[in-house]
Image 1 (spheres, rainbow, N blue to C red):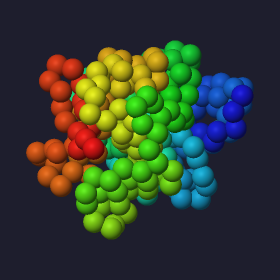
Image 2 (tube, rainbow, N blue to C red):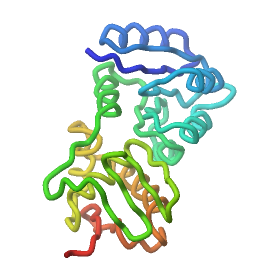
Image 3 (cartoon, rainbow, N blue to C red):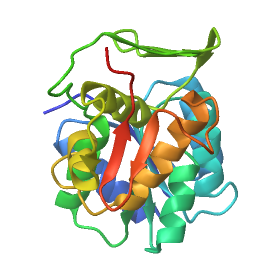
Length: 231
């Protein structure tokens, strides 16, 4: 059982009722919103640990709402959509979503995605460093704080967990599936587009020249590697 607070955003009353009943029965504290406008108002007024956000809504659609939420908060966002194309998934991830679930979905699948979005990736293997110095970029893993040229840069929870996992496996080529399972959870492994989007976002935030990365290196046909000078 958990007391995590979840905001369910969907314009379908029946879906809101089913989600509310199911999630409350699992110990979650649940609020609902009928559209993006109502969701943004509730997020301004209250604290939530996760947003389940339908992408196909009248008024402020799910994509726009996702961007607005991400602009003001690091709260994990799981998109719910009837569309199942890579283009749609990449657009949602670019907008700030942490995960993307296609309708119709089974409740066990959704519950697994919720647990994945709420979890923190563990530090792993080679290093348990509390901080990382990348020249102009400094990362404090204890405070979950990133500064570039002395200015704070906000990372989403998944971006931070991904960077932390890279740091704990520095100078090692990490396969796509291993990265996904370490940061998102054991049910993941095929969602390579997730990594492409999140690594690109991290590069924009921490690399001196994101188009020619010095630290977050692509390993063709394998995965990614955090390139650090060896002592």
